[in-house]
Image (tube, rainbow, N blue to C red):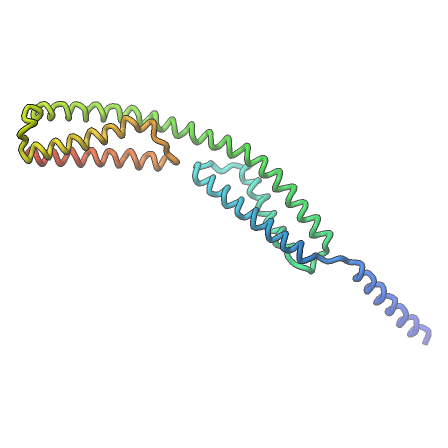
Length: 219
């Protein structure tokens, strides 16, 4: 009988202890949850900007950059975990502070790294421009010679040009314009090597088309 009484008393004490312990626990608040959502939204948008920067400046993947992005991804996961009222408030506060501290450090690191990578990209692009420069100088010289040779044949008849000669004259004007684009190529601002290559190819296509038109007209 005594054992039964002791067992009942023991269980009552356990229940009272657990109840008291539960009362002492302070759980996460709605304010903290909203704050975590706002911070998560900021971190996600910040990561998207970094991703866009990597694509825009054609950055080569490296361990330093990978580690920084890994911390950002881990921070997003951590922020999602504290967006509920089942977690202790103190634990949620600690996680939030840890995330803010880590993001601050990562941002400072990335600011320096991305600035360096941007400068590297510009240097690389300028080197590519120099390679193109040798080619476009040759092309502009050839276009000038073509224009000069054909222009001499029609300039004497400026006041009574035939329809064919007027068409050729128009071709020469367009050729001169495209040639001028090549001369100014170095001063153009390109966002990527692909954009620079596409523009160069388009100018060459325009030049080729005008020369073909002239050849057809002269037949």
